[in-house]
Length: 125
Image (tube, rainbow, N blue to C red; front, side, top):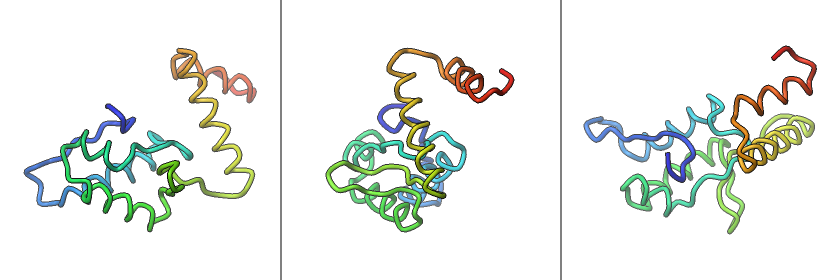
């Protein structure tokens, strides 16, 4: 999984250009919730090194994701999965990301952290 935070394998036999494979996989990871709003993406250089691609290939994928408003680049801070929705939804996305990061740092398994969140919301486990 590496720095990307999700599985991304390129198909060298595919007729789809590598930048498009990267763009589509990140888009799909965002749609599937594998990458939550506010999640930091690896730098272009780090992603390129991990995938064995040229830096410009990954940079193009990131530019296209940004043009689609799926990611946002915050200067030297890096690239992040874009937040969307109302101000309240963006705040909850930010808090959910912080909760997930903290649970991970504490070594709490994802299913246990999810159970705790469900209980806090009064939902069945």
